[in-house]
Image (cartoon, rainbow, N blue to C red; front, side, top):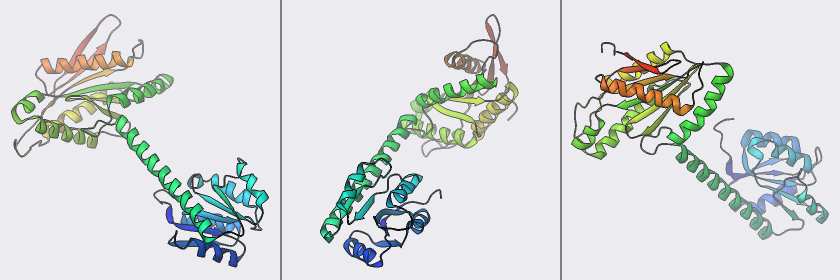
Length: 326
């Protein structure tokens, strides 16, 4: 049930006794806004799967399955690993079973208990659960920030190297071709010098969005720094890599990068391509450097074009592909 969020304000109360369920609900009516009731373990599991309550109170006396089996089943569900579970029993001896790894109850209360005791224990568990969720969200945010370029929202250099290393391992195993593209915005310094760095930043954000909207599945895109972007295309051939590069070149040339202080702004890019050589040992840095060499050849030969780096047994040369008519 992707996208179905746990309802933290609702508790599932499981007991074969209606009076016991009523007693528990009365104690917790100030803690939860709603309750789901189940009179046995199987109905309780079904209710949890369908309605995703944020808390479970289970009476140790349910008859169809043991409380141990019920809790173990919940814990084995992806959405039940962290849900707080309060076990209620009339036997103090069961308290020691909380240490059993297969049980997994969050807390234990023995009858007779007061409303205040149960309410306080449940509130503590809920507070702990929410703090854990907040911590997970913050850790997820930190992870996203660590792999994302702050300005453009694209992947950063760190993530690119990590992922490309994995992709190159896969490419070598299956003998796939792979292409590296370096994409550099032409005359970008003029934008900063003429219109200011805030406009330059806005242009880079638009460029990132534009590239990201045009890239296809399997094409890894990242901002390497400044006005340079890099891509890796796995399981592709030179002709397909050239077509992809031409797609990005035309996209830039045809796009309107206008800003309030620079209407009618148009940009071009210089692109370099380097294929992963199949008959020579070449690391990721070697291939990126080769793509950079090809990109700089595009610059020196007039910009707004794509150049392809050709590997040879001795040395290498660069073959320039002239841009097609706009």
